[in-house]
Structure formats: structure tokens, C-alpha cells
Length: 200
Image (cartoon, rainbow, N blue to C red; front, top):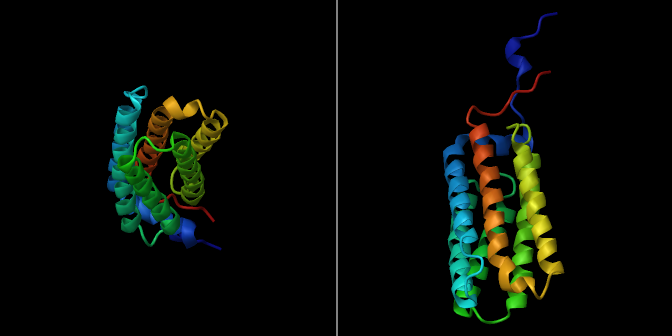
């Protein structure tokens, strides 16, 4: 019995296949977003020891801009799996940034807890996305590693309180943006040619 060669490669169906198609169709936008996140992360690493007022204002604006970018990205892929979790994370980043800008001196320990929550949510979402696009690109493991790094940063940030509230926020924010941006950039570049077919 002969088998039609075209039937050997079928696109993935379900949420994973939908995520693959979105990543492929919008890979330029996601590659740009990843590169921008890397740049923001590098800028954050340049000033981890800045004075409390300057650093909190600086990173507050970073969160606002990053959250706005994340909101735009979420609505561009609003039909893809994980839309609500991505949107909640982006809105949380904007709100956290606005709180820091409004009163940068209030509650550095509370700010550290909120930043740890941001890292934790970012890590969980990256791991979920990695599972969704693993059939789309061989570089899905970068998103997985990024998620693990963000979760580890959240744990270390909380375990080191109150000392970590002075210096670690800027440093960890830079590491998080760089790891997440690199993972997103390489995942987008790896999906340029479309989802990989599955042999049956």
C-alpha cells in the first residue's frame, strides 16, 4: 500500500499547533521584542549600585515600558494559548512600575517581594510557552532555561532579605530581561521556516 508523501507531514493541531503558527507568522515582531529586552537588560546591569531614588525610578520606568510592550505583544497574539497569563504579567509589570515611580522610597522590602513575584510568574509562563512551542523549534529549551533562571532568581531574592533589597533588584532585573530576551529572540529566529512536520 502506498502512502501519499504529503500525508507524512501534518501540521500540529490544538493549542501547540496554534502557538507554532503564531510564532512563525509574527517571528519578526518577536525577534525585535527579544532584542529590545536584551538591550533593556544590559542597560539595567550597567547601574545596579545606583542610589536608591535613581535606581528605583529608573527600573520603574523599565517595568512600565516593558509592560506596555508585553501588553502589545499579548494583544497581537490574543488568539494564541497563554493570552491571559501574558496579559496579566504585562499589566502587573506596568502597575509595579507606576508604584515605584509614585513613591520610590516606600517599602523596599515590599518592593523586593513584588519583584520576586514578577520573576516567579515570568518563569512559570516561559516554561509553559516552551512546552507549547517545543515541536516548532529545536531552541525551545532556551525558553525552558529562561523560566528556570527566573524562578531561581525569585527564590534567591526572597531568601536574602532584607539585604538583597538594596542591590539585587537592578541586577536581577537585568539578568531576567537578558535571559528572557535571548530565549525569545532565538525561538523566533528558529521558527522562521515554519513548524516542523511530524512523520506518521
